Image: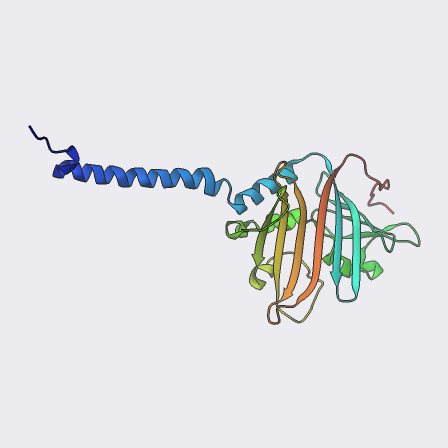
Length: 236
């Protein structure tokens, strides 16, 4: 005797279709949460930033800014309280910048700490800032982050495109005035094994001409002892 398969029965057919669609949606959801969300560039960046901010070791930092006709290098530390401390090597200038506060410079004449503006060095406030604080302020853009191709398989390159409108909201480069709208290309290099941010590169571009006006690069490494032995004091 011939028996029709269950799938050919009208009621069974609807159940089968519904079950198939449900399983398809379930598989897509599992794939999304296990792969897309976990390995989305924004999530990797978020994890790396959290790791860097939560570490209890002193971070060595090197900042280099290059523009037309100039180059500035800063070498120092990101201290446990988020402050920056170090030197502009070419000019032997010693600087200290609290996580939220005014940049202080050690006067070469009398050895006292003074606000950068007192020494006519207020333009340095555009350079001396924490890239971790900057990335934290850019967290609303993480969902639009993108991977970049990188021949070096040990590091992941993640790109953030920052519009002039968003850039205006950031506490960055307030001392600069190029007379142009700036957009910002931010590329973060994350070590795949350690989730450690090795580098942050900021490229400031004229929105109208698409010409790069200047480039700022930050690189990090762990440091247990600081080569800068002077301890900052607010007292003269």
